Length: 348
Image 1 (cartoon, one colour):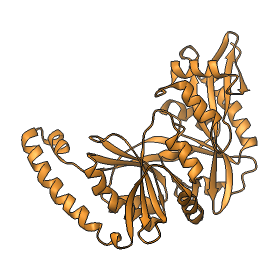
Image 2 (cartoon, rainbow, N blue to C red; image 1 turned 90 degrees about the vertical axis):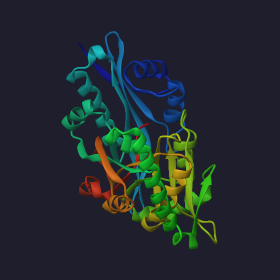
Image 3 (cartoon, rainbow, N blue to C red; image 1 turned 45 degrees about the horizontal axis):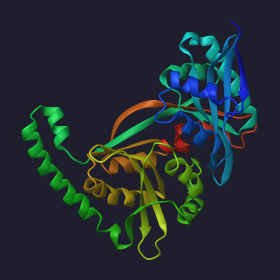
């Protein structure tokens, strides 16, 4: 059977892409809305798609969304690999390799670098065609309400709930007391939108965080506030006198469950103060726990541990490869400690 991978305008390949996604990918919500948002409206440029054909038609696809990454005040045009799918009847090594080798030849020539978050079944394919495994995203969790946790662990619901109430009250008092020092100069605000303060924070901070995706207001608004079927809250640490932004967190998840920190950004000390304010604030909003996925700067990991986050799992591999004209040393690109990766970077 002959296969060929063809670079296709997402608008022209819309019907095939939607069919392949619906049959092979766990797309949440309206797939057509996802295509319009992710492929046509991205602030760093329109995404691209490859369709894998055999004699009967389209049997697979792979997407390339455009991201702007920065390293030491140098912008990089980077391909984020997305939406790799092949129909079940064609899930052998050969069609997958043909598709991904074609994608890689294209991105190596057209972009400074490429990276992605392949599922477990796709990691071996990417490794075989030359991608480097940067590492795995680590998910850190902090428990805010202990009754349910104790009940699951000790199987004594009534006792666990009573103990949980006592533990929660004691820990909340400590968390609240810890906000006194940073509250002299800063405050936590919940914002309905991003604004020019996010631009200024990004410009002031981007040179000190290693390899990081652009985080100005335009990108953040597109990534989180315009994404179909997603609802988030924006927690901002601001200066009490000037109201300037020091750090922020994008919070997903529903009260009663886990608050998912989809992105956290700012200078390291400001992130620490933000977490200090955020833990009691999320408790009062009804969350039971807080989760944050991260790969990169070990200082951030140490900060999470200092704020009583525990490593829960590491199950999302990140792959990278330098392009032919990559302006930075490949050794830096392959150094996991040089990155700042959160859920913001996912291919969604």
